[in-house]
Image 1 (tube, rainbow, N blue to C red):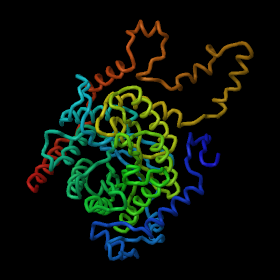
Image 2 (cartoon, rainbow, N blue to C red; image 1 turned 135 degrees about the horizontal axis):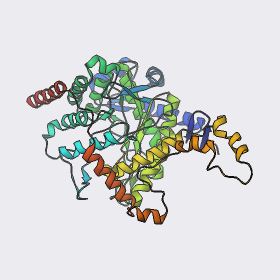
Image 3 (cartoon, one colour; image 1 turned 180 degrees about the vertical axis):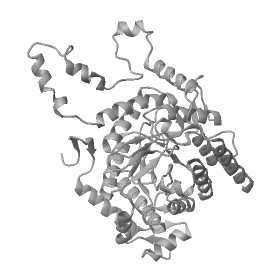
Image 4 (spheres, one colour; image 1 turned 45 degrees about the horizontal axis):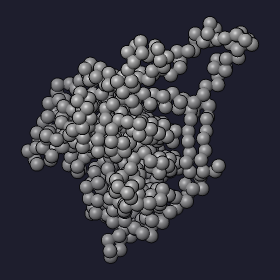
Length: 484
């Protein structure tokens, strides 16, 4: 089959391609036609001026048309890799090639209280606790804000979320900001935590998530953030949140063409502002269910779209942004496990560099810490598989096979003793016999997940912020409140 390939490459793990090279070229050319013949609406004067100065044409209706040469210049100019650092100043994620990293999502409206099981709005202490859980789980590489805060001043919402992220996790971050002024304060908080703006620009602690307004509009707020991110060298995406059948075409290929055009348009504006600034390429697809008018997560079309964007990202030599570990299920049930696991496994095989939304339920309205704990184990399984098959002489084990010979067994052989601990090991999965499982208490997987979650909540303490940094963060919040 030409369009679906599976490769096991010694030393490079496993990889899955969704598009054939000719299809990638078709999509690229179609997106360039959209930008040069259909045009986009740019609702930001500086961005419009940058485009026009670089050769774009704006007609009397306000549409701006981008020449292909300008688009392809921006693709060549953006860096092919990004390193994100943790709060302790250590490089933690290398966004390039097929490297796959996983993190939570932002801004869910509700979560399932781990103690009562109640689905309820988030409060600040809930988000702080959830961030500590994400900080403790080894499979979770970065954090986002997780929940909307019910009780805080809404004008400071994203700033307060970010302060919670800094205090409750030392992992790299992906942030949301209401506008460029919020982003400026977030940059100042991050700079306080890592040792200054210059260091932050060279060793970024976070990436910024922002979106166009589909179809084919560059809204003022998103572009203002995009330009500030370019200026300060904060890694940023410009990711179409496609609602296939409503804001993008209903077909996977049509959604990819439009979402690609919007991402490339954002890239052009970004590179015109500061050539060589770091940019993450990607977008998401939530097909609109025409029966319920609901956005759907983790359906086959969404998984195929993510495969397309990963192939396009490698074609453009840009780091990629996508999704994993999320579901449209309403509770932590069989549908949740199937959808979240499929997204996680396929995203990793597709080589998506930065995958967010691990713990999303109900298409992003609700978060589940139980799902987060389970996905941590799924990610562990997936990462083990991504290593591929080692065919070194020790692993081929010809000498061991010769020692045991026909009719023997390997239990007492040195080769088994030397290597059995290299096997993947579970944390919440159970591999005992039924009798052994009953003797150990007969807990279901859900009960073991709840136990691990409780243990983390009771014991995990993230690396603390220095007292002086905490004071700087509080001062930034205070100044923002006075301005607003």
